[in-house]
Length: 518
Image (cartoon, rainbow, N blue to C red; front, side, top):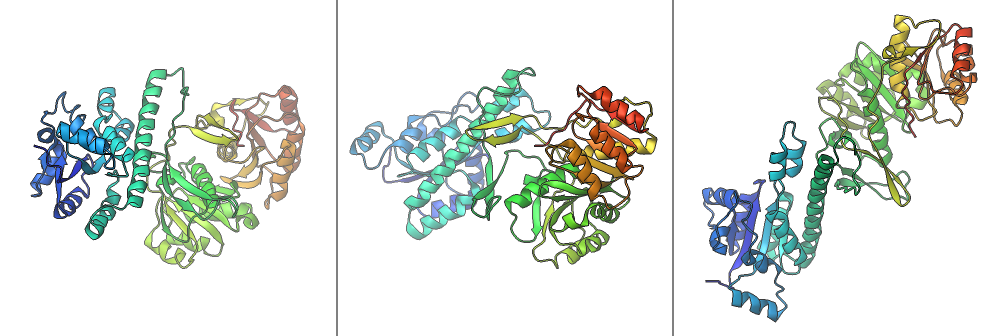
């Protein structure tokens, strides 16, 4: 028999964290608890009285649990408006009790879909049906029903009930919006998976793109103080990405800090050897390899010490005390590294405002797509993950690069991929000597990179992110002392450019791969 005076709460969670404490608080406040299989067992084992949903509905679970809560006794109890006498009369006639609160989290579809080796059958079975249905019913009727989808909110809900006897309207509204955000993200993840599976290798981009990102936090401001900003994380973002890095010291990160940190981390991740990168205004101003992180940083800084001031540093090795001492005299905005040794932290934490980010072990893995906003739309592309080594390219000049030149060409080519177009990188001995970036003319980039070099460029190599449209860039490089060049090739004047290199006794390699960065 229905008992309309009972206060019912329905708890059905895959993630059981915090559910026992919430259940105890609800029971102590006079709620009768309804629950499904695994959650019901968890509560019963904790000594908390609970009624199985199948006993409440009078209908057993079926189809291996696919049908549990899809029943009028559940959704009628959630959707009935308490201010509508006809709704309440309909409940009484059907013997349905109102449900005041639901706490639900969903089958882990995203985690299952991202798990290596997960089968399609496993992934499909993780598409929750009953959970989102109850969440939407409760969230729609949030004037009368509280819906909780995040264990982090359990304590707020319990405290409100214990203090006020019920969840206040403003909190119910907030939790309702959060609930719809969760179902939207869940459905978007399912859509992405099914679209990719249906499209096959021939179709990378679905007709409708559903995006759902989780807000990590608001930022002080955007690129400029008059712009508001926030940082969002992609669901399932893997370890090793900026969105998963942990800030362990320093003041709040800014929008520009995060852009620079991402650029630095992606560039330093290009190298397996010990490397250090310095980024300023989202462009490298120094990059180097070294036997130790301290040596790599010192060499990177020597490229352009003036621009390094106020920059961001990335290392692909744990930051040790020697490196911290080397960094000590330079003012920096932020440092990102796989980890920080205790001795290094003792030194660096003396700089109160210096932001330190621990990225964790493991290599960077870029998943999903690369997005760029335009007015009224969104540009979507695959990530620029390819980096063809010059040693696998085509030597087009009479002279072949020497082994040491080929090593430097590989280094310079990887750096140039991360420099704003038009990009020119001079390098020697595993470190940058001069960087020309962001110019409208490639020859201007070549000249600026040479002018900025504090070391001789005699015998150095040059990398260009795109082809040379005229021979003037090669002539400028030769004048600076460059011995070897790597570029994609593909200009209608390639023959003229190659001839210029031969005239100067330079070696040149075509990779057939362009790396514009706009």
